[in-house]
Length: 153
Image (cartoon, rainbow, N blue to C red; front, side, top):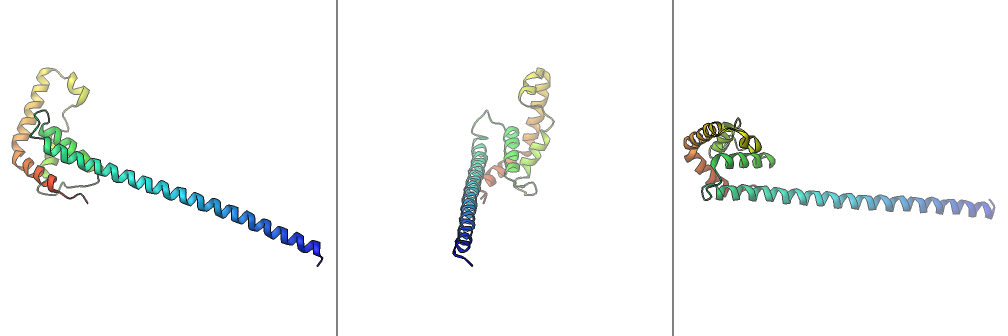
């Protein structure tokens, strides 16, 4: 084997090694970027979860302290937040009243649809909500105490 053939083979080997090192470095950089995105996503999910938990606690603290927040509205909001957290407490005896209240108000229009209702219809729905609240008030208060103490871990 001549020296020139040897040098050519050596150059090809160095070129292959250089290209290999380039692609390995590129892959490592992509892996680090992917790991950072995953960590950022996990952090964002933890923050959103914490916000939802805090929202449940704020709603439960405010429900009887603030006249503007009624039990039907609180139950709807809390049930939706629990769903977003993927927590099903519907079978839990202390929280069933929240689910019962939410289920009992599903047919009642909300937001813009509520505002478009005639006064007679609004009165009818308010009476329904008040009757439902009166029926479940003791259990709703138990649910409030339970959710304020619940560990969402």
